[in-house]
Image 1: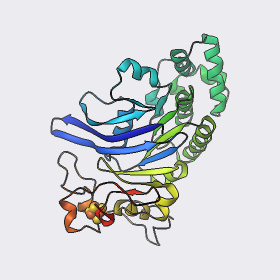
Image 2: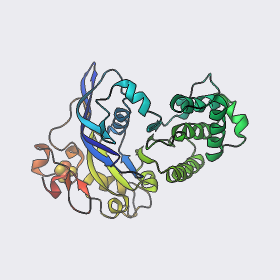
Image 3: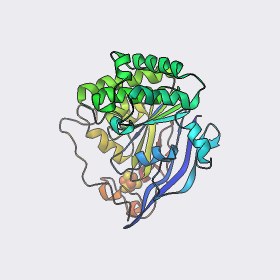
Amino acid sequence: MLLDVRDLKVRFHTLRGIVRAVDGVSFSVNYGEVLGLVGETGSGKTVTGLTIMRLLDENAEIAGGEVIFEGKDLLKLPMSEILKIRGRDISMIFQEPKAALNPVIQVGDQVAEAFLAHESMSKEEARERVLDMFRKVGLPDPERIYRSYPHELSGGMAQRIVISMALALRPKLMIADEPTSALDVTIQAQIMNLFRELIREFNTSVIYITHDLALAAEISDRIAVMYAGRIVEVARTEELFENPLHPYTVGLLRSIPGSKSSGSRLFSMEGEIPSLLNPPPGCLFHPRCPKRMDICDKEVPNLLNVGNDHLVSCFLYGR
Ligand code: SF4
């Protein structure tokens, strides 16, 4: 197993109180596996990714849990060790590619920096490696792109640069946080195809964070569904689509146009994700759940394996 996240708890201290953004999250990622981490805005998926990278804001507190990467707990390592791991072993790409690039440095030099920071090589060798990466990610005229500044590039090109930077050192794990959602639909499809090809070629494990279950299904071997800071269901992608168990997952699937579960009329889930400043008791989904029972607002269901490596947190399937 490459990554094992165990009972992770992250809180934010805000002026209005403590926000329990991630509340007892556990999941694993195997070598070469793509895990989709799916949930609405505010479900805790991005905070989970940032915690693994140790990139949380100062008002965040890791209140418990472990993040075991190749046998080491990343939450206990000194920052000097984390800086060596970042980029080399684990990289992260974000929704807005231009925000990840320095506006006043040529993009080629920015990618070269990734090589120079972690491997001993001359600037000329780093430059050749960058040009190779630019060819791999399908950038036209790599020499010209090398000398470009971020504002001279389209969103799609900038995301190709960011992907080349994130994959430059062939990391074991990449955390991709909505990498296509800021792009036009046609460019989105191109970037998804490219991304899929490259992670297979580089055998990189991926945590693919998205609010879009259909998009997650295109790329993921397994999917973990998050709701209000907790994981509510995990299964292999085909299994989740064939046999969704948690009422929230069922609702998400019914709202995908053309999905088997959507029927002739598209479903829209009522209600909103609860405030994590003052969350409801029991199962956090109970205010929206069409299958709610008496126990549901009193106790918190555990995440149970119900067979076929299918995990669900719902009293309909046990305690
Ligand atoms: Fe619905 Fe109860 Fe299951 Fe929560 S535990 S999803 S409220 S049935």
